[in-house]
Length: 335
Image 1: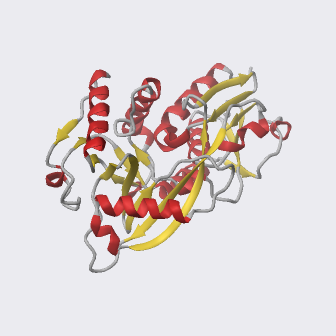
Image 2: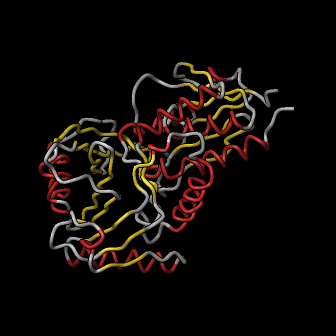
Image 3: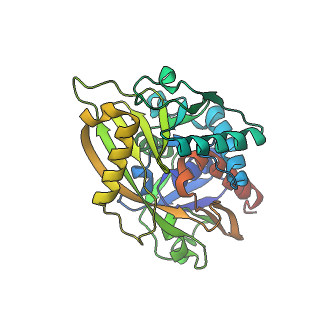
């Protein structure tokens, strides 16, 4: 017997994670989504609270750790094992200033009670690194997922659980036949609830495809600071995802020459062998950001909840968000 009816607006990783959890909890769920690929289709799929941590973001780090635990304690149940593409992160520095930044992060992590493993022989961990790279640290329990495979698998799981699909909505009134609505449509959330402090931040991402005769694909996530710029390399079965730029440019999703050039230059400075790979795709997505970089997850009124503003941490925080929304749904079960 259904607990009640729930409309989820948004078909990205957050909306699908919320919908699956609600269906598992007995709700009759309908997901409103567009036929277009959004930010979830572009992202790298890193589950990396340690290597993305930064001084001043203690609360984001705390919920990231909680979400990493949920990833490892049930969120992957029912999903294909090949969704996970890496189970470790190596964070490295290219020059002396970059190495100092890494020390700052490592010391901050230690102050949070979360030590990582430092190394001055990074090439012993990952032989594909450039010969000048020595300093880094290893985060052994971080993950990476194939973002597109995960979104597809979550949608299939939703269908198996009886979730239905519906077109996008332009106003909340279009979902008032449901007992409760969850706004999870990223940068478009303010169109449904004016005043939500969400803005789009553009991020360009490349996909490099392995070619016969090239050096093999790395087996772990490699994150680097390259002369002050962050870059990440995430393994896929057929190559590597490289990302990501970050700047505000309205709703523009066209990859720029300068953005692609910087990503390629930085990626090849970290792993020179990538220069022989095929440039298979350049894309850009729009991350929903908040002023304090913390997600907006909770209740707006008796019948409306929100789950957006995850910025660069959408995949990391998907289980935590689904869990938090599930708790709110239990509180507001219709009589």
